[in-house]
Length: 184
Image (cartoon, rainbow, N blue to C red; front, side, top):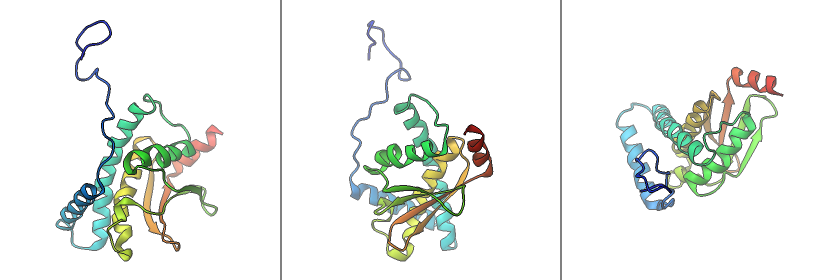
C-alpha cells in the first residue's frame, strides 16, 4: 500500500480496517462453549468457573480497549466515570454485541457503584437460567479489563435481576471516587 506521495507504507503505518464486523451467532456460540469447556476442565467447583471466565474476559477487555481507543477516539482517554461507562455501554457493546446495552444507572445506596443492564446478553443466550450469570462472568471480565486498562480500577459482577435482565454491577475503588470528586 502506498501513501499519497507514492511511498510504500509499513504494516504499522497502515490503518486498521474495520472489515466485516459481523460474526455469526452460531460461530460465537460454538467458540464460547469451547471456552467454557476448556475452563471447566481446569477447575474443581462452579465458583471457580466464574473466576476463570472473568480472567479470560479481562484479557479480552484490555485488547478491546486498546483497539477501540485507537480506532474510535484517536487515543484520547476518557476522564470521568460517566464518560468511560457510556463508552462501554455504547461503543464497546456495539462492537462486541452489535447493539448498545439497555441502560446505565448509578446506585442510590453506594456512590461508587454503577449498573449496566442488558436484557439479552449473547454470552447467556444458550445457558440455562440458574447458570446464566456464570456465562455473563465473561462479559463482566471484559468490562473489568476495559475499565482497569483505562485507569478506573473496579470490580465487576454479573447478577440476574428479578425482571430477568442481566445486571453488571461495577464497584469502583476509592481512588477513582476521590479522583472524580477532585475533578468536579
